[in-house]
Length: 376
Image 1 (cartoon, rainbow, N blue to C red):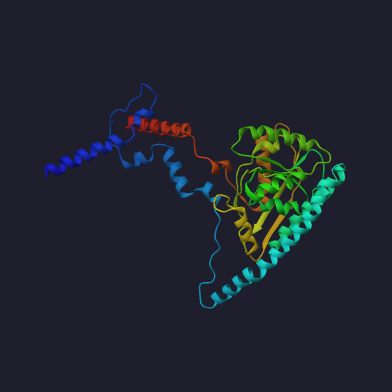
Image 2 (image 1 turned 120 degrees about the vertical axis):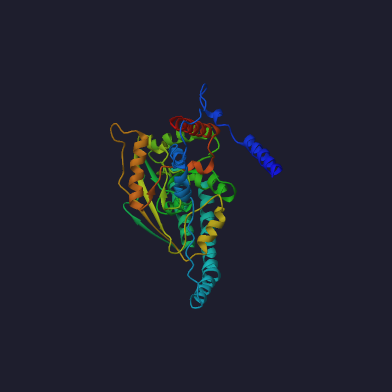
């Protein structure tokens, strides 16, 4: 018996060596005093808001929810519905998908046979070349939408080319740009992508004035900010389109807007996009799915259904900061598209909390524990 007790004591002492010392996170000169009274479980649970914050994060993780796609509920669960489901799969993959591939192929043939001569033969006629390239980009985007059997309803006046204005929209997928581009040739601000998408960005889309950046490059922010200011001043430039969330969100939530689009000193035109998930979820999770697979998912669905609202232009009010302006525009878009606002920065999806942030949390928690123990 004594031998087993000795083993328990030695094992517990070894565990104590692995535990973090709470005094390491306390200010210099502070130490833990023995509690004057009996410490109960409810006292530990009431130590500080840190535990409440942690419990709340577990129960209601509103950040992760923003980037999760909700799979459709299965409806082929009995012997009567399963044959219908099999018939639908056969129609979508054996009839609709090949037909859509043919449509998209024809669209690319028409586009490339027209765009290449226009781009290289009209070098000296910039105004005519830009106008024709704008029409051709709208055309190929229309073919893309047709390849998903896109059913898009546009509300409000069509955007026009005017100086000192910028369009901002909520962001669900890269197809947001295609859906908006088929109506108006926007110059979009977008993350630089690899593969065939990056090739299109650096060749075709650059002809309509699109601006690319890389999140990992801090210098890109300064360059992009300068290009934005120059672009909005141009009279003949295509309308500028920005997705201020900075990342794709699942069309149920709205994360914080970056303030860059709201400190250009120009009119901001909100655009709200809402997808109907009756046939397919249009959310693109770039961490789990390539854009090619995302397009295949759309092309093998029944249809992509969505509404687009061009909302009333907004200007910075006297005494209003760019951050407050961004929040006001986010409110307008969220209400129109039926999105839930959450106080999160979408870029957190691409990064982890810094060591300094963790240390501050640990020190705050240690101080709370010390204060509570001293009260007892």
